[in-house]
Length: 328
Image 1 (spheres, rainbow, N blue to C red):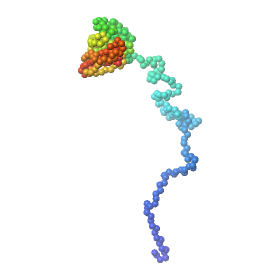
Image 2 (image 1 turned 120 degrees about the horizontal axis):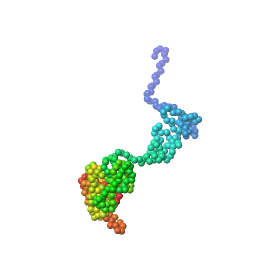
Image 3 (image 1 turned 60 degrees about the horizontal axis):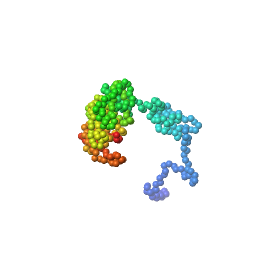
Image 4 (image 1 turned 135 degrees about the vertical axis):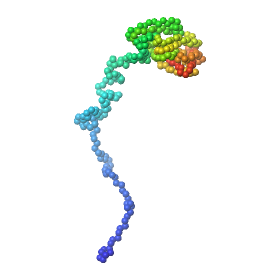
């Protein structure tokens, strides 16, 4: 030290930099706790619109006008309106709309014509046109040849149509005696449309292009006169009448068969059997063998033998049979 200067103070010992404890301070100031039994301070909330008011509308003021081209918001508690040009959702009909109106009505609205619009005639320009599952329409002006149909199957016709009795001859008598019913045919010619149906049976048009098919005589409703047809006999013990008569169609044309209910088409295998009273049709190349080895419903009621006759079908792959859920 210099002469006369005060002595220098001793330097204070330095503490380490990280020895002091670190205190984490909150980023946002916290509100002081509310006294016991008193609710804390809540920030003010916007008033909730009352039922029937548009959000953003104050009591006593008119509803705000939406921008041009946009729909107005729905009042509080009510569903939003449907976009322009689209129907309202189910169960959200506007006030004053008629209730109980069936869906799917045409744009014309309700009424007699609108109710009958669903059952209009279905013109397609073809020769055979199913109107529904139980009604068939044939256009005689298309094709040129006549149509042979079961007598009594005509329910309506349009145009100038001539109906003539088709001489059954020996073939018709054989079919009538075998099936127990007279299979009398009528010939429809002229220019017009004929509607065919019989006892509400399901009708199925089958178009042949040079191939052949065998149909039970009971299941034939109508066919083109241009088709070649003949009667085949399947003999067997236990079949009603002693034999089963079928009609084989071959050529180019359409044959309409009828069934009780929706039929099923099964492929022919070595183990394919069918009840002779339920079979409708089968491919002409199939071989039919009568099999009565299966006995069902024996002694079902007095005087009934309970014997069921089955038909066994054999043939190459590609053959088929058609069976209906009903026994004639």
